[in-house]
Image 1 (cartoon, rainbow, N blue to C red):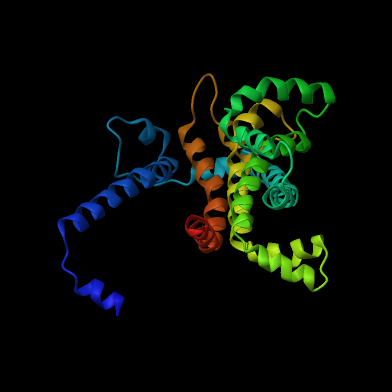
Image 2 (cartoon, one colour):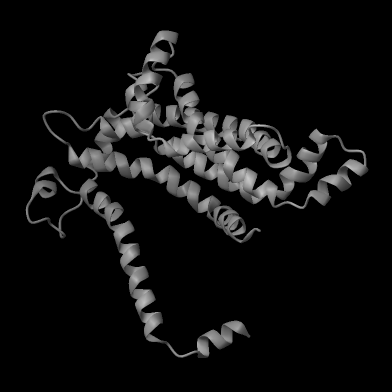
Length: 281
């Protein structure tokens, strides 16, 4: 009935302006991706022509070059190892911490929460030199371990605050009923709290994965060769002498594909998690 009423409602000026605004916003976000795809299919002469050519004969030579010479599979493997490790460890450490911070009251709790939040407020560039010195002295430079630890400094704060907001809004009566039935605190957390927070878990995992997959700055400073991730594989096509735009954009398009496929599978869980988080309380 509501859908029928919406269809029968006359279109107003506000509806038209909203639609125009949404189209403009969509174009702003889609245009860089569209332009990168076009550049990856152009020859070098077409890519550098002014004014830009919109009609041209496409070529896949840049994709062949990137695939054969760019060590793309090695960089992708490194990104998967670092990203999945950081995401999994972030959830394993962050979710129990969020539960304690949501349900326990102790001295210094607000200060601790503020300290955790500050990891999201301080610019990452402020930590580059300390991390570089520490990992160099420990012999961890250019290792997966260094990147995972660095990414956890960002991911943990996000997971703790995201999951804490879900757990705080869960009815405490559910946990009390479980304890009356004989469940210990760990069992209550595992069998009552976690299933009730699935949307929050999915949202935290998705955002953590995307952050670690796309991170560039720390990876550039803390790796040389062995642990280079996919964003650095794209940057390899930029040198002091020239920017190989065809290979650069082809590598960028190939790097986007795993994230786009991943998002297609998880977009429903992401929207559900964000929506539930917005209407809670």
